[in-house]
Image 1: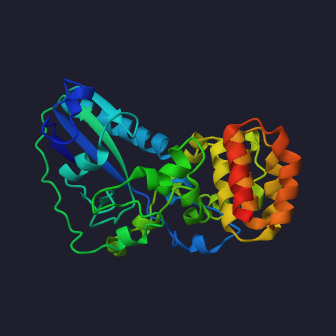
Image 2: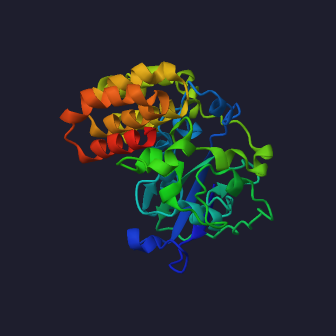
Amino acid sequence: MAWLAADPERRADPAVLWPQVRSIVMLGVNYGPGRDPLAVLALKDRGAISVYAQGDDYHDVIKARLKRLARWLSAQAGGDVKVFVDTAAVMEKPLAAAAGIGWQGKHTNLVSRRFGSWLFLGAIFTTLELPPDPAEEDHCGSCRACLDICPTAAFPAPYRLDARRCISYLTIEHKGPIPRALRPRIGNRIYGCDDCLAVCPWNKYARQGREAKLAARPALQAPALADLAKLDDAAFRSLFAKTAVKRTGRDRFVRNVLIAIGNSADPAFAAEAERRLADGSALVRGAAVWALSRLVAPPALAALAARHRPAESDADVAEEWTAALGAGA
C-alpha cells in the first residue's frame, strides 16, 4: 500500500472524477499463481483461462478490502473517501507507479520488485492531505521477454500496446467475431492471456497469493474444451458464478472455446463444433464454421454448408461460410 498527492499534471487527473480529492491511497494485492500458468498451453484439448479469473471476481474481493481500509482511514483521520477497483476512469497503473508500488513494464502492466507482475490494483480517493511516497523507477533494462513472447505481436514498441491485437481484449472485451487472421495465434486461450506477465524475470521474486477467495478453482485451471462447448447460458452462469469470466457472457465465451477447438487440430472435436451450427447465437455459429473448416475435409465441410448455409440469415455467419469454403477449395 502506498499513497500520492493528487496532481492534475499526472497522466490521470483524479479531479475529473472527484474535485475534492487531495490524496490517493493505492493498494496492490498479490495473486501470484501456485503453478506455471503457461503449462496449460500445451494441452490442446483444454482451455487456458487467465490466472486472475480462475478464482472469485477480484472486483468484489478487492473492493471489500478497500472499503474496510477507507472506513478505518476516515475513522482515524477524518475526511471523505471514495473507492475504485477498475470501476471508473481511474488509471490505476500510472497512479500505482507514482505511489511507489511498482513501475509500468514494457508490456504496460505494473511490475513490483517484491511481487513480480501478479498484482490487483485499487484506489482510495480522499480529501485528506497525505505525504506522498516516492515513485518507483523503471527496472526493465534491456529485457524484451514480454514483447517477444506475445502470440499476436500486440506490442508495436516497448511500453505501447495495440489492444486490437491483444488476446485479453479479443477474448474478453471484443463483442464481434475475432479477426480471422488472429484466430490461429490465440491457441487454446479462451479467456485472457498471461504470456507477457508470466515470462517477466521479476517473477523470480513473486510469491504465491494468500487470499483464499482469489485462489484458482480446480475446475477452472484446465477445463476440457468438449465440456465448455456444450454450455448453455444457465450452465455458463453456474460454472462461472462469482468469477470475472461471467462478465463476458456465454456467447463470447463459447466463441472463444470454438476457436480453441479449431486450433486443436483434433478431428474428434468436429461433432461438437457441428452441434453449434444450430446455436441461437450468430457469434457462436460463425466460430463453429471456422472451427469446422480447420477440422474436417473439404467434402465434409461442403456437405455441412449445403445443410446449414441456405437457412443462415446472419451476414457475418454467411461470410464465415464463404471464407471457409474458399479456403478449402
